Image (cartoon, rainbow, N blue to C red; front, side):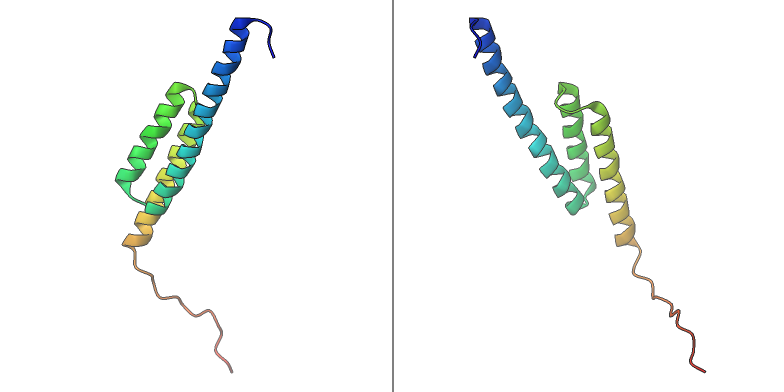
Length: 98
């Protein structure tokens, strides 16, 4: 424990900031998972905005925000393609018996 009053306050402030940042990171992870499972464009846009906001505040690194946004966009695009194209019939690759 610090002997200086100001240092004691710094410890309290650091604990508060750490807890706040951890809560935000956990919330971002949950939002990301829900957006991937929802596969909705509007939901993904709001999640992307939350990642940008966290990066701007210094809670996460800007490159991490960009990476997560890219992966989210890929997942939504993949889901859109899968939903648009009906399942094609599979060709049989077995050779005919002689």
